[in-house]
Image (cartoon, rainbow, N blue to C red; front, side, top):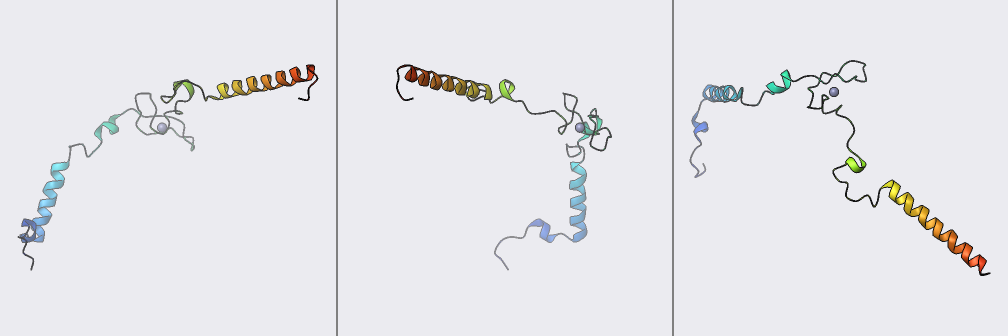
Length: 115
Ligand SMILES: [Zn+2]
């Protein structure tokens, strides 16, 4: 035997332990375990792939967590900082670079140098 004192539950009979767990389970009811707010929430009603209406509870935007819409992109994204690396900014940098390269070639050929 160990030197540790016995836990009170070790002295209980099985029926006493069962009663203890039943009391515990009953004490948990109505304390947030059951999502009662979700059962009364309005429904999503988005068309599912089965063609039926989605029955999931709706968020404030009227759709459920699966049908809430696409994530925000571009300027609407919370991660947007300055736009330096956006598709349009990169395309503009490439256009400008190509323009400068062709201007440099034209200048060299006008001077009679090899481009
Ligand atoms: Zn939905």
